[in-house]
Image 1 (cartoon, rainbow, N blue to C red):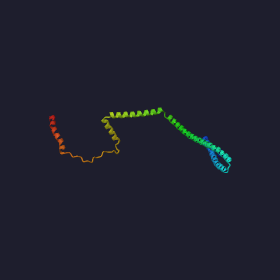
Image 2: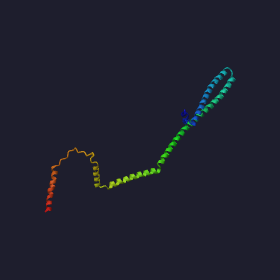
Image 3: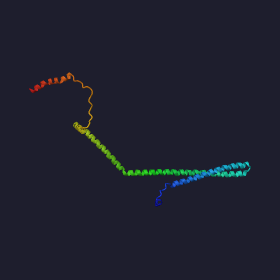
Image 4: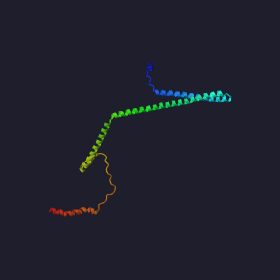
Length: 207
């Protein structure tokens, strides 16, 4: 029992605007009921006035029609009041929507501010400058390596690469499948003719 009475009640989600909208709608509904009741009454009085004229009671019929005319004016005022109440309800409901939008914008703005506090414009500029410096430094290194390395350096790099990849499955070039052309007899005899031609010269130098 102590827990039941000691339990804190949850805050009501019904706002003052909600209460105002409810009251306005209740007043509108009452006016519509009044409007409907008066409309039915006026229709009956119109039929009654018609019956009085048929019975020759013109004065009573005229008095009844005057009353009907007054009630018609009341109906017009009632219609205007209903219209005003509906406009007011719509304005309050639209204002509630606008307030929710503004609250959402406020939350978003606070979130952006907190993010801006975590990283200022100076921090962003510093990061961008450091990134640009790193790119420029790498470009300079690439240019230096491209201009300084000799063929001997290139061979040493390739040899180091071969040492690193030694023992791994290295893709070798494919063996050509086309037949190797045969060397003609004239091409085979060419080295012997050159040897015979140069032999006298070597003998004279030796003498």
